Length: 171
Image (cartoon, rainbow, N blue to C red):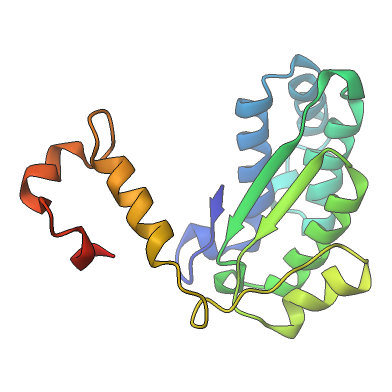
């Protein structure tokens, strides 16, 4: 998961692809992917400041293409709040192309509905669905997540004695 932000490093378009590359390297645990990323960095040590299309080619598309299909399972990447990122239209276009290049690589992008973000996905024929969170009732889902996290071993367990039966206030 990559969370975009309006300010700071997470708003800079040049940080998204290197961050995704690092996440993939860590999660895929593929020596083939890692070796090709290393090779690309040796060929162009300044790749992280190059245009996003070049970053995607060198840090994602080429290394991912080197991995034999039999070694892979479905991989889902979530990019949250893309609309908060600088140049979100360029990022959306590059990500839509990447989603088409690597069939086992699925992309979930959250954003406000902006033409600059939805247009590239539409034009490239990438499946897209829109959910208006103001019209959807997610209370039950939120309640389930909170209840799960309040159980022993959950991230909120240490706070459960303070919350007690007041979960509805959090929801």
